[in-house]
Amino acid sequence: MNNDISGSAADRQVAAQRCLVGQPVRLEQPDGAPQAALRLCVSARLVTDAWSADSAQAQRNVQHILDRIAHVLVKTELLLDHTAAVPA
Image (tube, rainbow, N blue to C red; front, side, top):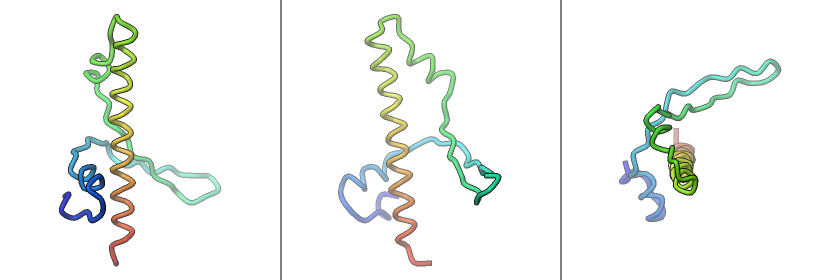
């Protein structure tokens, strides 16, 4: 995939990273156009791996998970930008 993304080395690095996401979900708005949300996969293992009796370590573990979520969002934005730039 990273060969399909033009741009900076950082963009290509983001594109090369694997991300596990869930299915998109259609959100109906009573008085508006439907929107979509993308579920993130969060397993029981991820939750238990974040736990630690040491509160500082638990905070680092949670921050690591949040960093991974941020990476998914960055990659999603990159892919959306790339898709929008491709002629129909």
